[in-house]
Length: 406
Image (spheres, rainbow, N blue to C red):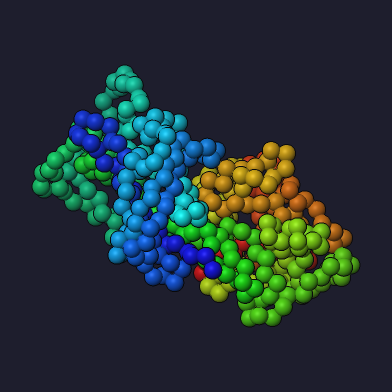
């Protein structure tokens, strides 16, 4: 079984001197195996890329290094083997993302939420001075969030070794437990920091032994592939129904392969399941994972697009393109896959006639949540636009499944 790397990453911008643009990001990562043990004293190859929303790379480099006894690698992004120049990245054209590959395994892509000020300023021009505004927070004011309560205080000691690039900015960080916080960091002496926790592509295994890629998106850990198990998690087989008339009359769990052709479609697109299999108490998902609810799908979309319509997210006009794979969609309908979800157009098995439609054109994913006594909520992405929409489909239809971590 392929290793699952658990990586805790600290990225910082470090300056050569107080008056110069930083020459790179300090990068630290702790690598663990799938059983949680540290990868101690092991040679590893890290490919690190800075990519834009379209998935195009602005900077690529490779580091061949070794973990220490604690599984830690420590390097500087900008000092690896590369033909690119980090100082030529057009930061003002962002946002940008950090993409990480370890030993040939794609770990994931995460937003670069804080751009080093000195990098950005180096490519900018001085603008006209505007009118004096409200002074706002004083230099020595601090705000600390403790258990949802903000406490104000004053800095009483002078900061040492302040650099010429001291500034105020907003930074969003993700802690190890997935809690997202936003704070004002003031005069952080030569430092911008962002914590990432990423999982590798393989390591999650279903009851049939199929391995699945996973990715952290916001507070959630999602499969990066459609489910293809043929058994419930207790080992009991799920009926494979191939006759259209039998399929449309089912009120119990079943699955099928698109066009009844597992050889062509199973590995890439997974299986198509009716909702009765989805809701079965024996659970389709691997142990420790479950079928996402309507609300959990909404959480995913809102993390990508905070302007999405309605609190339950009826539609986001941009999130579909971000969730789509960069390949596999017909008529140039590919997406950016910026968060590593890799949505593919698996099509569906129709409830009305038990036939197959839409492979290459559309993807549909069940939720565990019922919309009526006969229907359940789903999520839909199409090749012809960048949206993801919330729909309701008859429980006898066959749709794809993505599991989410408990």
